[in-house]
Image (cartoon, rainbow, N blue to C red; front, side, top):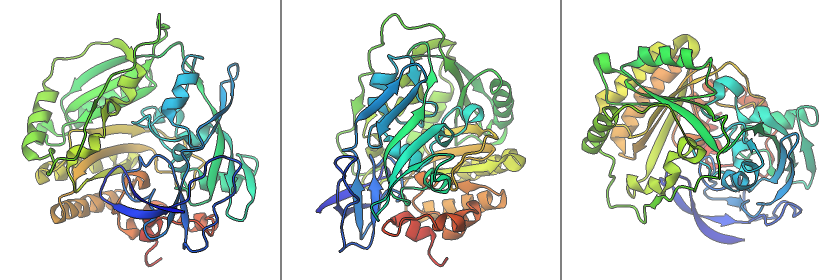
Length: 436
């Protein structure tokens, strides 16, 4: 065991924690009798405290980074759980395959994607990644290695998908990929004037496009409430003549002494970005479409030494228009927000995960500089809207939601608790279970 400082992507919590790395998939569950609990830790791309275990220990899994097999005919890939999506792409994309679901960064581990049951811009078409997991091996603290699938140890399969690492260590997983002609995306970008126009574009685009997402000006009000840019895309049917060069990105070498995201910079950026020239339909590399922020290394440092919180919620379909409008109005009045305010639709496809976040409706995600009490007041107002709308917050992005909001939003939490490994816990879990 070694002591190392760990953080999540939000950089709000930076605490020394005991570390017991798992260096290969054949090793046993780490023995750490002096620690109250342990938690698997992938690449730390969760925003809040769901990947942290302050006061206890972590099990870094990046040592599990090997391919096991790839069936180029069926598109089933088996990898160790610590492999990054970015590393998978180097093998599967030239072979004509792509992951069925991806979040907004390619620097997540396969195990982390399963533990958070990630969703992407194509949820309306294919659901979460949990729907595409064929099977995985789960290492429990009692030494058992269980193969979990929809038909084998099905309850643990359901608990582990979206289970935040609390059911044990995923050592390897088999994933069903989707075929592609090449590494390019055919993208169309459209400006929209307000929330109602977004909803019209969303309904229209879901029929013909696999991927849909919108950038929203979080400072727009009145007739401009919810204005922004809508992107819709499919994998290009034209194979690239040669693999495109990987984007050469910038890097933020250190955190400035204060947040560069403030009311003045936000208003200037949003105005200029909304009024930029219209972009026509065209092909571009998948990296620039799915992962625009990955081209800026350590971009989270722009929020300064106090870090950032991300607030991502889903408002159910029946209340989606009114609830989302209320959220955007509240954020605009506060003068707080982020350059990247993302709005997209969730479809009706259900995940097998007990604690999976998506449900049919609209999801809104924004990054907020950690401003202390003023941000806490804004979050309390947003929480009330989410609760009144019957919505929920995303655990992978959360670092502060009240316990009651979690338990109301995830009604299967009691059922889930019976599958938690007795040696596993997290800062997030202890927080949302406070008083349960």
